[in-house]
Image (tube, rainbow, N blue to C red):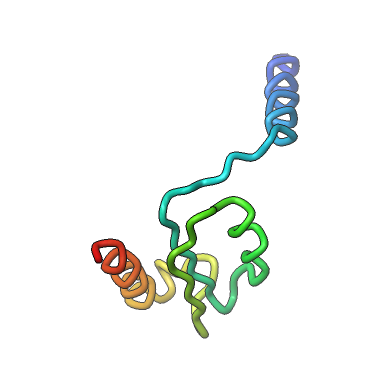
Length: 85
């Protein structure tokens, strides 16, 4: 019954997707896990101008925080420790 409202939202989101992308300038860390999206570098560099930490891991996947929590937590500690310097 309320299809018009749903389609309006779809049109709005499509219009926003075609708008100019904003680049994030905040210090950013990227972690790439073995079983996750491996070609992230292109998108990370396109959308972030201040990547200060990049790491790759031989285990884990899309749900790394659940799959290898100590690895993920350790990487976050390294990232935030570097920001304090």
